[in-house]
Image 1 (cartoon, helix red, strand yellow):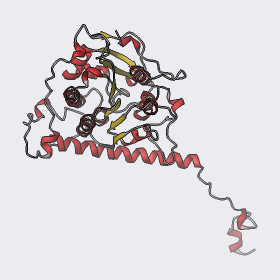
Image 2: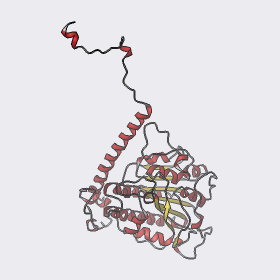
Image 3: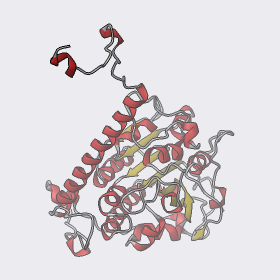
Image 4: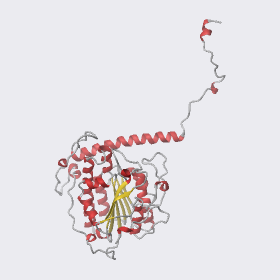
Length: 381
């Protein structure tokens, strides 16, 4: 035996290359999981960049981090800019608006009852993404404070167990739990079939009523089933643009059913923390924008015939949400309008899917018997 052959290891090789083990192929589920993870990463990066740009454009300075002393104080807000006939530059448009001075509408009078003149003809649902009830209590929010006094309010309403933006809003407009409407994830993936209906928009549309959606996260397009929403103004944008688009819809003629979604309280929570000073400022900011919408409703003559529901999709803790925990699931729920009790703290158990049932009930449309949501009739006198 030669020296070379003596050093060769005694290993049996396959007789044919085809017998060699093949690399393990990725399963379809593994590929989907990888795509979902990449989508979450990309959207998170884009969201942070968008948030930083928003703060810079609005306040003239960039955020420095998510911890430590607050990035902004109330003194950082520029003074309100007087309206002019000439074109306003971007800084004027995005400056925090003053709280509108509203004349007391008829719905606030103690003797109001639901009559032919005050019958509910419109329902406007406003969702403030990521708003915790205790954050609302701690923040300076004069518009919402006035609405709480003028309406029926629950600081203990609950969202669904999957306390994410998309599943929660899907339950809010479909009246059922996520397992039934089919949206079980916060971020859609490639090839996702969408949600199961019906929704309040499809049911209202089938009854001949007009519908509209204005929202600040592009993924909420999944809530608009085909041929269910007459006006759908949605993209990844910020609260001032939501205000502008909502006002355009109102000025063109308030639909019978309108959904308005403000995204930035949630974004600031992810960027700077829930219950942070910056999030309180974001709540003050959106509170002022809601005041502008109320003023537009009053100017258009809609306040006395509109049921307004203000709520949220989830809470949050630290820099995140999504847990099946009270701090993530507890949300505010407020109703104001014709025939609604005033200054009442609701005692009934309310879930976000009850919003859909209440909207249909107010518009005198039948509520599907198999829905998980039920009308919150306690709000009415």
